[in-house]
Amino acid sequence: MKIRLLSIFLFPTLVFAQQKDTVAMHYAALIKAQTMSKYLHVLASDEYEGRETGKKGQKMAAAYISNEFKESGIPPYKDNTYYQPFTIEQYKNTPIITQVADVASNGKTFVSEKDYCLLQGRGQYQLAYPTILFMGYGIDDKNDNDYNNVTVENKVLMVLEGEPILADSSSLITGNKSRSEWTTYYKKKIEKAYKSGASALLIIANNFEKDLQTNKTKSPYIRTEKGKVEIPVFYISASMANALLKNTTVDALKRKLTTTKKKHSKKIKSPLSISIKNIPEKLSSENVLGFIEGGDLKNEIIVMSAHYDHLGIDGNIIYNGADDDGSGTSAILNLANVFATAKKEGHGPRRSILFITFSGEEKGLLGSDYYVNHPEYPLKNTVCDLNIDMIGREDEKYKGNSNYIYVIGSDKLSSELHRINESANQLYCNLQLDYMYNDEHDKNRYYYRSDHYNFAKNSIPVIFYFNGVHADYHKETDEVEKIDFNKMEKITRLVFYTAWEIANREKRIAVDSNKK
Image 1 (tube, helix red, strand yellow):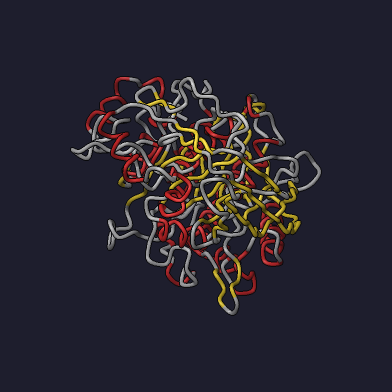
Image 2 (cartoon, rainbow, N blue to C red):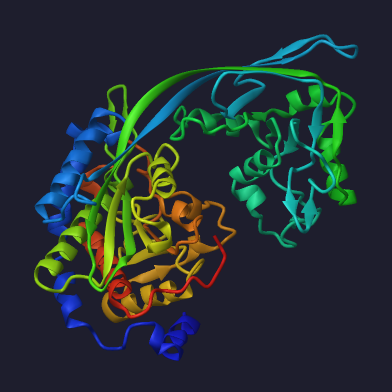
């Protein structure tokens, strides 16, 4: 912290003058716990049925949010509508994997949820592979490259989960006991296999039962882009892998890879057929947008975001999602009202502000993914995204102490954005800013798990404000009665002061890092 505070004084032209802005303070005072309580008691009520994407409650929430934008005096964006509609296709997968009979073995049908589980794969698949290509850990890194001099196009790949771990528990990738993204970000191996032209990916699970349970709790696989093609990806058990490997075992291969530290790709003559029959269900949804046009710098746009969807209903249980993310949505509504009031009273922002409440976050960041691929305003003009996802509770670390917030991503693309947020806090809010989850080796990978990440992928600086998970996370007990609205007020004011400075400063914040 001492180093960060020192940097504030070393770079005074990049941050707040060390004197409070009385105009900003006047409008920050309009951010109130009571106002956000009013919003949240509606959004997290049983009437809204958990706000599941594409369902009745989500539609009701969208109507409520757009009406609040209208009541605040915010016109429909582009003078047309508050809605950005998109369609999703939801799939319920029924996969079958069969080992085709050959000279070495009789045919065997592997059993779904016993030998394997489907992670992703859409459309109608009837695929047959004469061989499998074992690719070690499936890593493409300067310290460990399984793809070097190997042709994988149109092949089914089989890889080990995680990364090579040496006898001293250190990683061959990082050189220490922390784990790289090849372990902590499960999509990384999938993305690499897809970009390399593989036809399918089998990941040998370290703990198949655990992966199976995790996968079973996920929603049916869904996408926003109708024509988007993605390869089928399976987690498979060690016993299934051993049956395919024939002349060796998973344990033997792991020992070889970690003791020799050499790459090991191997063609395995174990013909496979994969059959997937997906039953699509089309759902419509919408992001809700409110736009406040700026002044002399109106073509530059600040995005302030939250997701308003949640998990919906399971039988008689309603998942109201008060903290996740009714709290962030309520904060956005209050912020929109305050900036609209400031503009009415002659203190409008120099840069434009786009308030977005996303749908489809719980389904895989689908609303924000749709927006960045179909932006209503050019991404090149987008200065940053300040994303609020869960700010109304305390986690176990801060039990009994509400004066904190986890700040994630602030320094990954713009050191100026990071300093502005810290300066705003020092000058006005005095919250404890915790960067624990900003660590690139954070095993929780929260940086990749909320809507801001779709902006970061497009080189747009972001901050993710987050209170951490708690005992009621993704449970029916995440109710409004447990929300600390005074905590919400303090954090939302920090977001306001940060946005106010970015909106009104002379120069647009610089993008000076490439850590997406």
